[in-house]
Length: 232
Ligand SMILES: NC(=O)c1ccc[n+]([C@@H]2O[C@H](COP(=O)([O-])OP(=O)(O)OC[C@H]3O[C@@H](n4cnc5c(N)ncnc54)[C@H](OP(=O)(O)O)[C@@H]3O)[C@@H](O)[C@H]2O)c1
Image (cartoon, rainbow, N blue to C red; front, side, top):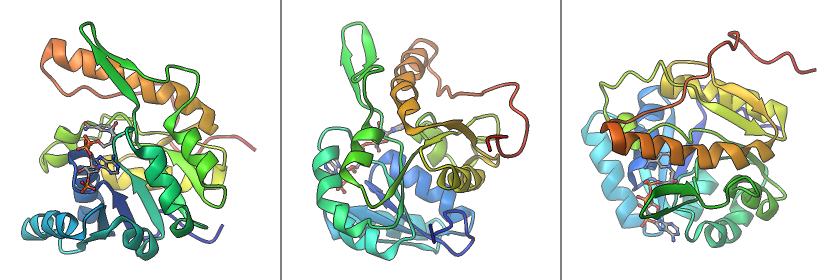
C-alpha cells in the first residue's frame, strides 16, 4: 500500500460531505490541517457547503462531485445514507482503486419501538463496500461520533473511542492515527472488517439512549492500553 491515510499532507475526500456527518468529519479533519474535498452528487451543493466551512476559517476545504472528490484524494470517507450506498459505491469503484476507503455508514431502521440495526449481526455496509471495491482497502471507523458533536467546534471529543475495523492491519493503523485529528486520541484497532456487523448496529443503542436522555452519547472502551495493538 502506498497511501498513508494519516500523512499530514494527505487529501481526504468526504462523500456525502454536504450532510451533517460528512461535514462534521470534514470540519474536524480540516481543523487538524488536512486538505478536505467534499463530494456530492451535485458539484454546486458541495461547493456551497465547502464555502460555509471556508467562511468559518477552514481554508483547506473544497467541494466537487463524488467521482472528482475520489480522484483528488488519497483517502476517501463514505458518509452517505445506507439507502443508495451500494449503487454509489459501485459507480465510484473505478475512482477508488488503490485508496483507503473509510466507511461510517450505519444501516438502521426505525419503528414504533425506536431504532434497530438493519443488518443486525449478519452483514454490514462495510463488508458490502469491500465486495464492491476489490481494488480498494475498506476500513470501518467513526460510526459512533454524533454529527451534532462533530459540528460543534467547541465540543470536546477526547472521551470518545473511535473503533477501527479492517482486514488490512496497516490501513487500520493509519486510520487509527487519523482518528487523532477528529477526537484527539488514537483510534482502537478492534480487528477484521466483519466486526462492522457489530459496530454498525451499536449505533441503534446510542440513538435510543440519546432519545431517552436528550443527549449525544458516544462510545468509550476502557482498559485498552495506549498505542498500537500487539497483533503480530
Ligand atoms: N448523523 C449522525 O449523527 C451519524 C453518526 C454516525 C454515522 N452516521 C452515518 O453517516 C452517514 C451520513 O449520515 P448523515 O446524517 O450525514 O446523512 P444524510 O444527511 O442523510 O446524507 C448525507 C449526504 O449523502 C448524500 N446522499 C443522500 N442520499 C444519497 C443517495 N441515495 N446516494 C448517494 N448520496 C446520497 C447527500 O448529499 P448530496 O445530495 O449532496 O449528494 C447528503 O447530504 C449515514 O450512513 C449515517 O448512518 C451518521
